[in-house]
Length: 393
Image 1 (tube, rainbow, N blue to C red):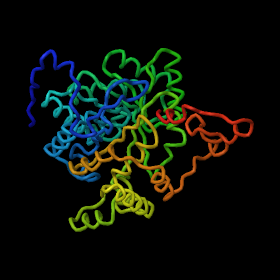
Image 2 (cartoon, helix red, strand yellow; image 1 turned 90 degrees about the vertical axis):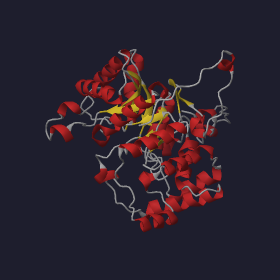
Image 3 (cartoon, rainbow, N blue to C red; image 1 turned 180 degrees about the horizontal axis):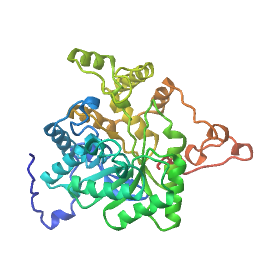
Image 4 (tube, rainbow, N blue to C red; image 1 turned 45 degrees about the horizontal axis):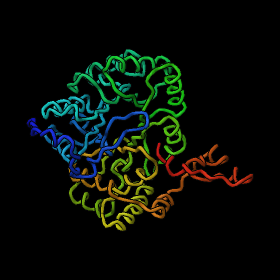
């Protein structure tokens, strides 16, 4: 078990000196969003793999390996950890709590967890976990109570609604979430895998009624899956929300031919939850394009380019990086030092064309972001001086 380290005492004058440069760009912290001033690392460590209860789905990761990954993330400057009440049949939260307590660093971390998914059927049996699932108030109460115990803490930095279940009113949801914030059990609220119109209605209700709104949105987004860009990103910009996308590196499917051959020789399969454990034609083409851009930057990591892509597309983006290997984490950190050109972004996007769809395809995108509107241009020439700045959500 990792031992707690007592920091050296500072002199009074040292307290006024600038902090030392971080050991990696992961340690160059950022403000989460315009609506949440908490300081977080630019990548969040996805903790779905921390635990060994889901080994049939995701491979095995024992406690020692989990702690090594958490140590590597923290020592590289990371402080943002993303988990959920149900991950690995509750092992993920429990092991994170044990690790943080053993090092005495809880307050240095920003721990995000989630409620809504059933987290007790594995223990109670089928048909008995109805109180432990859903958006409703009792589910929230039980989940927060249990997450605090597992995480060995008295507060949760960010609590996400894991997904929208369509059975709880927006009023009940936001009133209930505001209560746990007022109680000091939760600091900030997040929305995960929810329709943009629901989040918009919820935040409007919250701000109109003196309740706590959502400050961050989590959902699937990558160079191959760009639906996020239709409604989620504009919504986040409107409400001052951060974006914390998952699936950015293709669920482990963005791999070069060289990497695939190395895995084959080792007898390793691609990670898979529900999809095929082999690359689809689109995944193969995207991987080749990512490899080409990676070579232009003098690196081999296609995942670093995939991460750099979403980081370039909007502001206040904090991708979730999972996996089980420390070397993969180091590869992903490279993304924070990569500056993609407009030409490289256009090339990557050309591999799998994407349509924004109606009504954006009809009225055009927001000129306050793009700097131009062909409709407005018919009557006069307009300047949009904040266009570049408004890239930031």
